[in-house]
Length: 475
Image (cartoon, rainbow, N blue to C red; front, side):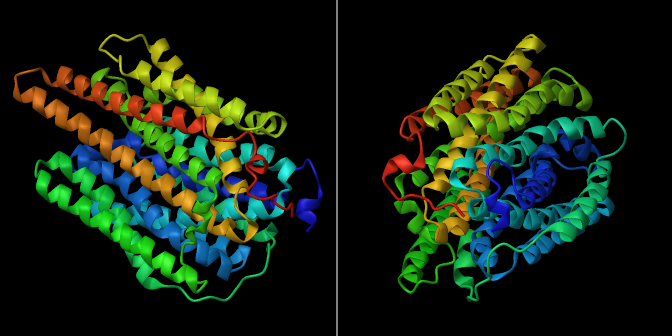
């Protein structure tokens, strides 16, 4: 394939897909800074507003399991047109949404398009990039996969200075339309589509299981613990049904999501590490703007500017980390990165009414740089450990659990923070101090999770080929 032949260069198809993926994933976290504005404009509570981010992630978690089947069935151009078409429609609907319910529906449509885009990028990369160049190219992909959500709050903080929350979508729409037009003009099909049927029972159980799990967790904050526990239990049971269904379909060679990828130890370790890291990252990204605006009194622009250096550092380091991975392997990057994540989150547990802003900026930058050092090697090692026929399924599972973990982390920190703050307010503590204490406890949860990131980092090999699983053919 011509795209793969030019060693040392990023194939044009990957550049196009990275640009498109960056724009669609940016929207995953672009609403975080707008929550106070939305609460007053749409007359909703903080927990209700939070669903604009949580529902986005949940929709992706529900749709991505189907993408492994979808990407094998349609051409690259068709998958790209579907993803960007849905995203554009959702964005246009969000601009004119008259109520919260319509805005939530628009976010779900946006998320459906994004859900197709992420596995499309990862699967195409594994097919067209030679193994010796994957670290460098995956470093560029990190820009889209990890930096976009990190930059979301900063971008929205700047945009919100110039108008209402609708402007967030109005700015994105023409950019996304231009990228869609350019992509359709230049994108070529990679590989041949394969005809296969879909098991809708699997699709429904995946959506209900993962959705129920996170929705149940978010209900704990409401007070009725038994109802919340019942929803979580139902979600877990449904996920178990989905897994057994896939194991049954695998015997006939027609699973919706091929779980044989999990037989590869390096892939499974990478999956666990990435999931826990995303829980910690998204949790802190929700808490930090709330702390800066609600407790410290900063506006959306000041908040955005404070977190921007960390996001930019992460983006600039992505390609550098990729080149270092190609040269030195994964362990020399992932272990220090995991320790950096732990130290940054431990630092955030000390937030106070007077913590210097330079200290907050430094901790956030340390967190973002550490995540940059971690994600590129983890993605590359994980997918490099599975055989080529399972790339689409491997990237779908990776993307699904990334979204579930992010939604799980978001729901967890908001629930812990609110429950702690409410309990303290009930004993007569001032609301601001109660909220601050709730945030500290939520950051402690993130710091505890980061210990698991360090533990899994120590289990990863330097390179996928060193696992003895198989050599991955260059395409």
